Image (cartoon, rainbow, N blue to C red):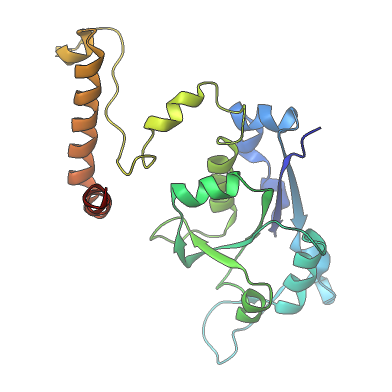
Length: 237
């Protein structure tokens, strides 16, 4: 039997999981044993009075910081010796998550994800456990849990057998360095707006050319950074 893709979440709010991951394709795959999910409560690893997990920042300042002596045993429990899964810390200061990295994670054995709270976590934990710092974007959430849900959803949908139409992945945003082209379906005319004529032509070559042109135009307009990288890749080819 194939070993399921395994996700372990370290969080102060284990009740947030599986959450939406228990529904739709991810939920079915979870029920079918394609992947597994284990949510560990960070507070269970505290030896402090009232299960305290945080303390004031060294050097002063606002907020609280998750303690190293609580997070370390939590990570060690989630990742026994020999565990090959990457350990990820979700933080706005991390490297931006890309579809390429999602694909790498989905192709591996799984992931251990640490959800931060408050001002963050003790830097020594990041260094001692070689945590990979990942950001979902240039914005701040109240905690790492929503980001973990998004990261897991992105990975699980790429696992073999999860998506109904595997071929659809090849034309998704980011797969070829471009944003995806616009989609249409019936009715052919809606509130005076018609489906582009080329899509009704039945000419597969013209349809493909139209879709590529639309994808390029959308990427050029909305994501100059992606467009520049796409142009560089084309030049290299």
